[in-house]
Length: 525
Image (cartoon, rainbow, N blue to C red; front, side, top):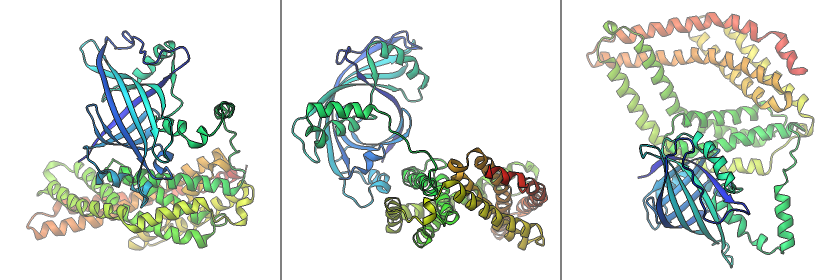
């Protein structure tokens, strides 16, 4: 059993003029009417990671903590600036299986070891409004940190200040409080977490340096890194896009396990983008390496699609049913649709979790890591990005044009449905190729992506209607066998046919606009 909460907080550290442990009076800031003392609590935490610190590299923290009102196992996953999702499990001697599953995409089969021990004396105060409702908690933590792997000699100590919003609190309060905190001599913490600071300050390499070296290193760390110009080579552009998709696949794994809304869809899209860019930019990345990985990505997308397709189809059928007047809803149509969807969900959900825990999926993640560590670049990868990337985008457009023309001339019925579906897949590939091309081709690539997206969405709606008709026929057969009226399913089937015909009528006009030579000419400028 785990609990999930959204944590929104900011961390501060003392400047040279601030007395350790001193918290300024924040009464009167925004809606803060009072600042109540909640006493001091001792928090004893051990942080776990792989020997290579895979969790820390992604800003993820996993700890076992005693003390305070929330002692237990805590997993924190980054969401955005100042925001993390914290998943809590009850205190136990070993890592709960639920949390082990949530870090599996990063940890894989590597052992988790105790990495850092933190002991914090936390002085807590509550910021409340005029009615006594909690707005935020502010604390001063006197931290003692010791590295456990590898073990280092002397511990390090510092004082850290945290302002954490109450559940459902307004993030604007953090902005309102900051000037008062800054005026009191506090500044935003340079480290994103206590663990990050502990790792930095207990680094064996750091402790081996002399004072002059430490000062020099600290000064150098403040310098902004010089970024390489985006799109120097075709390899730069393509690999940057590939890296973003791989990062998304790994990061979305816990969200899918937690059944976070839209997580399955986003993970599936990342797999499709990655597979598509392998095929579009085959002159940059060696297909002898990427094709086998692409086949595994296709498998993963199909597994993810079982649940996602059910979600989309159920929503579509429910929307169509809501449009039908009550007097035309004959029989328990809504109830049958709900039961039909839930039965599919239970099977697909269980299957998906098995896939994410399976050896095949973990092996795929390892292969993706290997791809980034040793990219299979072809000679064209070293060429200027513009010319190579442009050729790939135009090649995918040409493929789309052939399929759209075939669909426009296909006889109505099943054959046209198939050709339109093939055109949809080509539009998606052209869209992703243009999406990856943005660093090399600039805004024209983004405009071209939007054109491809428009074609994909129209054809996608048509295909969704084809699938909906198949489902409605299945539901109609089931209701008839149960002695119920199948009238409403037939009515919905007819409406889906009419919608599909409307999309087919819209396609020629849309394609005439999308296929104007001026759009492709803009990419060459």
